[in-house]
Length: 466
Image 1 (cartoon, one colour):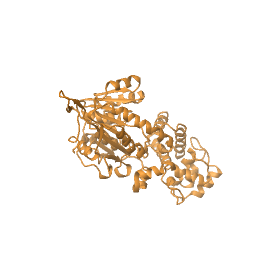
Image 2 (spheres, helix red, strand yellow):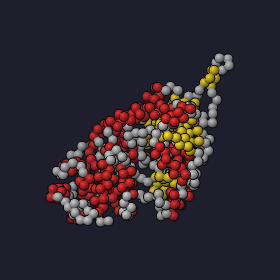
Image 3 (cartoon, rainbow, N blue to C red):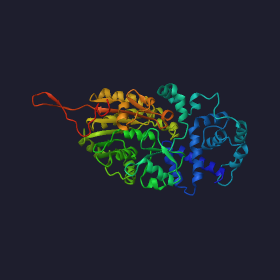
Image 4 (cartoon, one colour):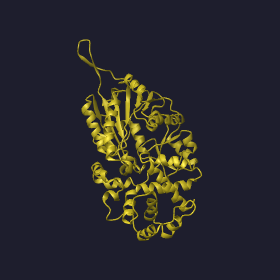
């Protein structure tokens, strides 16, 4: 494709993304590219780099569009100014790309030509840009993120403007880390060990692995290092009864199944039958045979009632704002609204309370989000514990030591909670709170009360290293 054809394709893809604002941009892009299989790999990369790049700095590009008198944000305007201000294309290159030729954008209007000439040599940053514009976030969320990050606010926002790394999880049901590295090397893909996850790999370059034999044979899965760590901290060991209450397409389910070595039982639940169905292929490829899937429809809710207090580990990967994934999903910052947060908070509380009913005495309940906002994280846990005195918090430091056998990064600990962030840890943003259900008691023959004996999945001070 010519440079102009790539810009036209980027404009068309951005148009498709804007037309379905509440659908994830990566899903829109996947469908769009699938319908255009004639586009080669290098052209796809160039198109996606333009699209994701424009979305990452959308606030700044929009500010410049208004300043240059080019009107509201449009896909064409964003692509045009992204080439000019971020990639510093000279005027002649822009005029050649935007010349109205076959598969190329319409010729520059006189207003656009004057604006391009005037802005030539300008930087994307400008001293007059408000902080929210300069940092490419919606103005309404700035105060919340400042409270969440404190002095690290600008550093963290800068990290979210960088493309995410390509992280892989080694499937221990099929191989180990050393053999996975060798298998990828045979595909001319260089991978190195992740710094925190003992089962993770990170690619040196942004390459696709899904068409290669290592992926197709189930040796590896694509999974952010932070997500891997969260799954490992559940402590899903062989022989336990484990519940993934919001399993989605099964990324964390797969990681937990590998840790259980196909011994014990995992139940993956979700309200979406489609998401659970998509996990079936992944489970077969990974060789995970101890997972059953349940849709949380009317029958699924009846099943949950019958299985109250039966699970040693219950993971609640709650639906959330996704603010921790903005470096990976830059469109998310522009589709999120205050109303979304307001609607999510009661839903998160309801989901957490429902999942808690399935936790066995001395079992663990783990609440996880990929949000950076305290209202979705610490505030939810504090409210839950106030309403559920039969649960107590476990310390994240002790949990990390027990499940990973290493020391956690000091800056990942926020009191008893774990918080991973892009700038500090090179992962997506994650929050984790681990709670334990207190030991049940029953009346003794003499009328007193005796503690319930520990079961196979029991945990407590001893199991968490305290």
